Structures are given as structure tokens and as C-alpha cells.
Length: 116
Image (cartoon, rainbow, N blue to C red):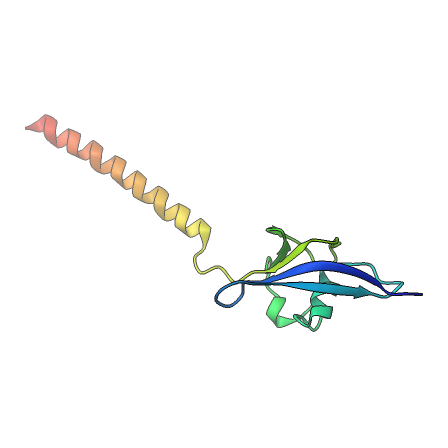
């Protein structure tokens, strides 16, 4: 049987400025188009356990995290993400603590003002 072609876009944002390029995924008759297959055929991964893509959430489609076996469709933008530099939970926790500290300081200032 003849090969099928699916046109997708690859966006690599792992190092420096993100690069976007068109990629034509060639599928054999028995292959189904998946994210993992696209990464393999693009030469970005050597397998499902590739250390470059081992961490959770390092690739997705249109900003949504996808699994290795997720289907991919014509026109999709497959994105490779860089690791987070700052933990979002830690930032939220720090900001909440700062606002809590500000409340305590304002209450203490009111108590001092009443004593005078």
C-alpha cells in the first residue's frame, strides 16, 4: 500500500528562542499518527524512554500537555518545552506569605497608633 502523509508543525522551545518548522510525517499503512511517532520520525527522540524527553510535561500540542500515545492530526503544532526555571507553587506560596505579613504589620501599626 501507499504511504500516507500528515503535515504538522514542530516548535522546539528547549534552548533559547523557539523555532517553528513544518514537518511532513510519513506513515506506513499500519501506523497510526501519534505524538511519539512524530517525535521519532523527526529525530527528536530515540524512544519512549529517551532521557531528553523523560520528564513529565516536556511536550504537547497547541499548549496542552500530551502523552506519548496521544493521536496527532494534520495541522497540529507539536511543541517541545524547556524545563521550568521557577516552581509556580513556590512563587504562589511566597506571594501569599508576603500579603499575610503585610496584614499582620498593618494590624500591629493600628495597635501601636491606639496606644499613643
